[in-house]
Structures are given as structure tokens and as C-alpha cells.
Amino acid sequence: MFVIGWSLSVVTFLALAGGGVRTAKVAAGVGSTLLLAAGVVTGDPDHPAWNVATGLLDVPPVLALFAAYHRDAPAFRLGRWRAMGLLVGSAALYTLLHLPLDRLPYSPWVVTWTEPAGTATLAVCVGFLLALRRSASVRLGVAILAALVLLVRLVSLMGPSGDPENLAWIPDAVQCGLLAAIVLVSAVSGVRALPAVRP
Image (cartoon, rainbow, N blue to C red):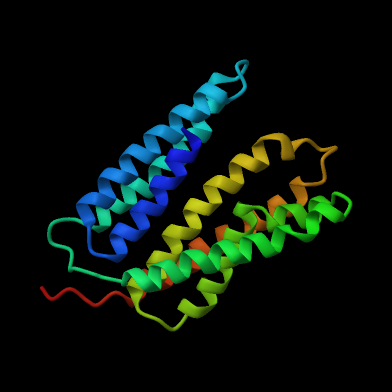
């Protein structure tokens, strides 16, 4: 279920790049349901509520997809080749970041920045810097994306890394602080940059 769920995430991205909004919505909905079910089934049997809570982290992106691509939203096509380039580039970057870790001693200071949520945090920081002088929609988009990554990081902070004896909570807390600041600044500046509504 995990493999199918994550594969459907790729299908969703490629469908959106080609303008297939309906296909993307169906793939995102089914994929999110499978990931939630897989998390509940394979999670810690002693903490079913925690399994459901972590599984529900896959729901907000799907809700954002349905909210953004409504009936009156303008059509947008990224292009399949550009989309494939982004996917291949992201996979290559993720692989390069993890290759050296197998040969080095474990360090929470490194692992928390190179795992998926950590690399997503770094990507959000870069996007935030690039969006400072962009339109209101870009800034608000960064705020939404940062909020989603912040949810994932908060779960890590409250989970195993929240153990005081596990120093991973320190870089996790730093990432949460960065993401919270990005959400606040991007949301406020984005709302202020919105065009005034004529009476």
C-alpha cells in the first residue's frame, strides 16, 4: 500500500503538469487513503491514535489540491518534460544526500537535515528567499507549503525525537522555528500584497 500510495503521488504531479486535473484529484484521493490505511495497519499497535494522526498528515495536501483547482481556476500546464525533469532532479538530489550517510557514524545533526522532511525544510527556505519579491500568490503558496512541512516536523518533535536523551529534538526544534517564521512572514506579506478590492 505504501508503494502504491507514493506512486500515485507521482501520478498526481504528472497529471497536473499535463493539465489532467480530474486524474490528479482521483490519484491524490486514492493515494492519500492508501497511505493512511498503510500507516494505521503497520504502525505501533499500542498507539493507534498516533498512527491515525501521522497518517492524516497526507490529507492536507489533497485538500489543498481540491481547493486550488476548482471550477473557476485558470488552466495551468507545466509540461510533462519539465515535470519529469523536476522528478528526476529531486530523486537524484535525495540520493546524493543519502549516499555518504551509510559510511559515516550516526549524527542527529546531519540526519534530521537530510531526511525527507529536512530536505523539504531546506527547499522551503530557498523558496521563501526567492518569493520575497514575487506576487502575493507566490508568497501565500510558500506559506501554505511551509505550514504543511511544519506539521510533519511537529509530529517528529512530539514523537521519538522528542525524547530528551535523543539530541535529534534540537535540530527538529530549529526547523520548526524556521518554518513557523516563514509561515508568519510569507502569510502577512502575501496578504498585504493582495490587490485592493474595489467597493
